[in-house]
Amino acid sequence: MPNPSLLILPGDGIGPEVMAEVRKIIDWFEAKRGIAFDVSEDLVGGCAYDKHGTPLHDDTMARAQEVDAVLLGAVGGPKYDNLDFSVKPERGLLRLRKEMDLFSNLRPAQCFDALADFSSLKKDVVAGLDIMIVRELTSGVYFGEPRGIFEEGNERVGINTQRYTESEIDRVARSAFDLAMKRGKKLCSMEKANVMESGILWREVVTEVGKDYPEVELSHMYADAGAMQLTRWPKQFDVIVTDNLFGDLLSDLAAMLTGSLGMLPSASLGAPMNNGRPKALYEPVHGSAPDIAGQGKANPCACILSFAMALRYSFDMGDEADRLEKAVNDVLASGVRTADLLNEDGITPASTTEMGDAVIKALDASL
Ligand code: IPM
Ligand code: MG
Image (cartoon, rainbow, N blue to C red):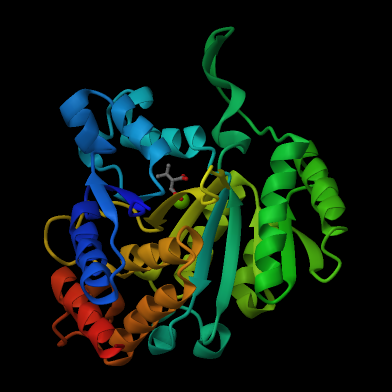
C-alpha cells in the first residue's frame, strides 16, 4: 500500500509560517509513530497568481483531485485587492471547493479550558463550549446564477442568486445528522424560511432527512435568531447545519466565542473516493492576516488542529488526532501563548515556531 498522500498549499500571508509548523508535526508522526505521508507542495492564491497569472493552476487543481487530502494555509492580501474578480486569490480556494465538490464544511467552535477567560463573553457562558457548525460549501449564493453586475436603464445592478436543489440540501443535512449521531444527538438547522423560498425548501428537506435519524433531536431556527442565541447561550447547541453564506457568518461568530480565530480548524468534505476516503481539504478558519505576516507572530494551532482533523476524518486515526489535540491543550494549559491569546501587557508572547516546538514537546511527552 502506498503512503497516504497530502497536498500542502500554504498560500499567502501567514499561511506559509503556520504550515511550516504543520510540516514539523507531520515529520514527528513519521519519526515517532511510523505514520508516513507522501507530501507534495504547491501554490494557491496570490502567490499562484504572481507566478502563473491565475490563483490556481490547472496542474494544482488536478493534483488536488488525486491526493487523499489537501492542507491549505490561507489566501489573499491587500496586494491583490485591486485584481480583476476572476483572478482574486479567493477564487483559487472557491475553485478547489467547487471542483472537489466539498459540500460539507465542518467548523468546530471549541473553548479550550485554558482560554475560557479570553473570550469576550463571560467565562461561564463559554467554558466547556464544544459545538460544530456544518456549513454547506459548494452552492447557495456563492455560486448561484445569474450573477454579475449588469446595466439596467441608466444605472448598474449587482446580482447574486441564492439557489439550492433538494439533493444539495439532502446531502449536507445527512452529513450533519451523521455527525450529530456521533456527538450529542442534537441538530439545529438555520435558514430564513420567513423571508426566503430557498429557506422554506431547506427546512422541508432537513425535516424529511430527519425521519431517517429518529434519535437526533432536530430543531429549526431563523439564522438571525441563531446568531443571537449563539452569543446569548451557545452551549444550547451541539451541531448546527446551515447554508453557505449564513455558515460563513455564523462560523466566524461562533469562532470568536472561543477567544481567538487562531485556534480553530476546519474540514471540508465531499463524497467518498474509490479508496473509501472522502474528498477532503483542511484549513484553519483564520485568514491570511497580512498585518502580521512574515513576523513570526501567527498562532499555528488552527493549522495544526486542521491536520488533526485530517487524521480523524481522512485517515481514520482518531487516536492520533486525540493525541495531537491533547498536545495543543497541554501546551495552552502550561501557559504558552502566541500574541493573539494575550491581552495583558508585560508578557512576551511565544513566536509561531516556539508554539510549534512546544506542541512537538507535548507530543513527545505523550509517548
Ligand atoms: C471562509 C472565508 C472564505 C469564504 C473566503 C476567503 C472566500 O471567509 O472560508 O470562511 O467566504 O468562504
Ligand atoms: Mg469566512
